[in-house]
Amino acid sequence: MSGKTIFVVEDEKDISNLVALHLRKSGFIVIEFGKAENFLNYLKRTIPDLIILDLMLPDADGLDICRQLKTSHDYHSIPVIILTAKSEETDKIIGLELGADDYVTKPFSPKELVARVKSVLRRSEIKNSEKITAGKILSVDLNKYEVFVKDKKIHLTQTEFNILKILLSKKGWVFTREKILDLLWQGEKAVIDRTIDVHIKKLREKLGEAGKLITNVRGIGYKIEE
Image 1 (cartoon, rainbow, N blue to C red):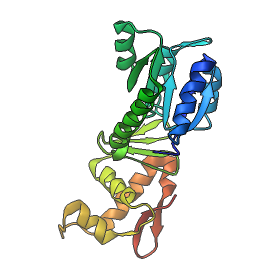
Image 2: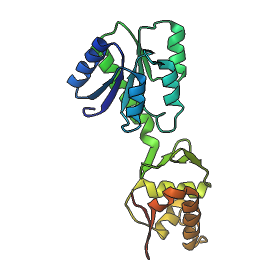
Image 3: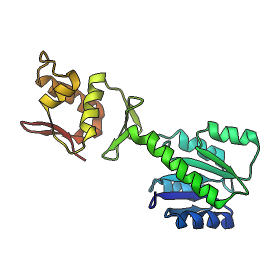
Image 4: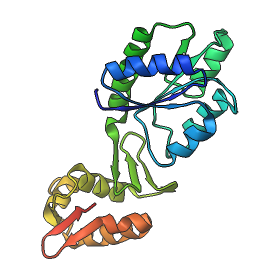
């Protein structure tokens, strides 16, 4: 897990430095923020692998920030560990209900926190293994059958979704019309290969800006080209 980026959003400098020190010893890249405003502005440019979030920040309520992250299409999949002096059970329940992946109260063991970070990251990798992205604008959740182009949810037919899933399974790989037909209808010969062209045309139209990712390889078939 070395090389993964962790954002530490904590206004108490001593605590932030302590957390950062132990994370860096474990091979993580750490960026520290003392205020919510700085953190949110930086987040627009760089997406971390995990966020450690204090609840009592000088310019914002950590629970509000957690809610904001977990309801955002761009940021909802980023794991969040709440690190706070608030040890009341109610606060912990609220944090977890908002979507936080773990909740650590102060005082805490830095080594235990690092272990929790690794555990959350492992769970996140498993959880996100069924999500595919392409071209930085197309996102497909294979479990929920959801497709997003930037922040807009796209509604596809089952066939259109399955074609997109096939093309995304090997980005850059050219799938012949015959291969797509075989994967979709398991060799049903009543379906002609030009049917794929019709579905691809409709799929591109629905995807809008992301439709250009589907490239026609003349005389052969189609591929996802990032």
